[in-house]
Length: 577
Image (cartoon, rainbow, N blue to C red; front, side):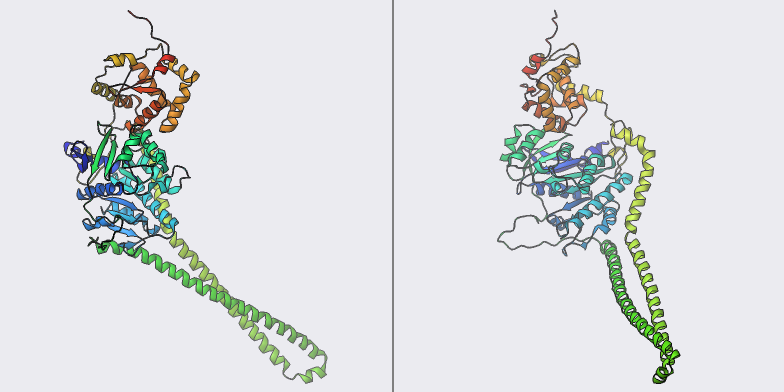
């Protein structure tokens, strides 16, 4: 990455020592973020500050607004405010999803997707799902750094309940979106209600004030137990910021106040005055309105055809009743005709009977012809309704076709994507207007070099500890089989499993961490992260749980080592000179 790209940062607040807190733009746009805090603690203000800074730097984004509180951004920035309310620039539905993704990614128009005004929650859910799906599909080709912000993310990715189709799509974006340039920032008041897979995969987190026990326990598991109480003492706007890209594990930060109108503030006694808002181009809104009008015209035409169909059905019922009556009269007339042929007396009493019978047959024939004609018209109407229904489904068919084409491309790109997912891709590239390939590319990770650098930063040699604390913490065994035996035959194994469950890390990762400490002695979190090749946040959560279970202890210089009872279970080192 070039020096210019490295300097692309946004300032969002100040650290406890008065220094500016700056976030790298590329990490914010393409990373996985999570911001939380109780109501009034400042989490939505933090999201607005990040949005203001990105918009000020010329980077578009899409905000999923569940409470109608982000339109204040339009006080300074031209954004498309789309939703169900009349206050929005345009009223939209799921049929607009592809056009919304095109506007955001290809036309660089920032979007506020306001889902707060939909009376039918299923419509709002489908709209978000289709917009997110189209963003993901388009980013596979564009690879343009872009941020999707989702408020109240626990409604879509709950911890306790089942995750629906929309939630699974958001989890997919958090896992795979980064390689295509699509980042996500999830926001929630209740971290305990958010699926832990989503939180532990985040590479930058913002913890505002939390007071409920279940929520503070999450903080203790992800950061460290000491923060469980500290997070409840934060003032408005203060937060603990945890990122993968800084040397400092956790920083206490005071976020600045947003510059634009605060539409989410609690109403007071003062008069509410809505500011003058910037608008997007009429042509852009006109294109979206045309989609709505086209849908309305088709819906109106279907209703009109259904009304005509109902009238025709009633007319056919009437004709069939008349035809049935006519047939009864015809049957009676035929019986009378037979009688007239055999009885001259009766025939003399019904002069002109043959003419009346002929006229009656003609009327029956006319009724049958009219009935057949109406049936043909009814069939034509049915065919027309089927055509219109096919037209209404054409957009979904077109999307399916595009998805099939994308599936065809996957086989050719499978080798590249497989290498990229394993961290060995040499040229995985994200492009952005105004930047070159190197500025937004990802460089491969040399884990041997990363481990050496981590130990170098820790002043820890490869083979021997450098301090008395390290020498005490170090345990030398004949082979890794000794540690494995301890985990299988003692209660330490049960404690390790509980730590894995609490941190959402695998047992294999925990064994690698314990093996590294058994082999090298006391190590800092950064060195352990390099050893096991996992994110710092995930490893930090595991270390915290292992300390809680008494498997690990922390030395005076904030390194991690095996606890006394674990070392006691291991075989003593061989005697040396």
